[in-house]
Picture 1 (cartoon, rainbow, N blue to C red):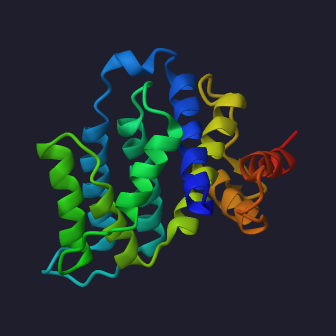
Picture 2: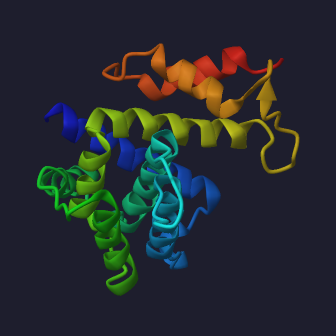
Length: 206
């Protein structure tokens, strides 16, 4: 199994685990993942900038975070409880390796949003086009995805639901700690997600 295929399998497994943590019977709930995708696309466009009547500079870091969030919903849309993660990963790898791009990032993003609205689907080829036009590769996606997913688990395990979770530690928000932890680790390590969690645990106020 190729490195990229393995990364996609890991992300699919992590997404199912997170969705199950939120709702044990999530397959049968009919959650509108496609709607989450196009709403995130609109939010991403605001971070990128689209208003011709005023000067705007793309906030690339925020755009990348939104791309990672969209992938969470895209994976959720693909997981059906029947098709194996290996098969799903192979389908995704094929689509991601053949990016579809319009004239600019904004128009490619609209292709992604249009598929979500009109077909209620995750257009992985247009998603890959957005990644390419913002300068992201599969390693960037994997690093961002595993980090955010692990932080979501960490929050749940440390009182996010009952309000006891501490979001700012030592003058930094948890997202900032996450970035520092992820940068210090090797994404190729088999236990990358576990190491991210441990890194957050070591920093979290006792």
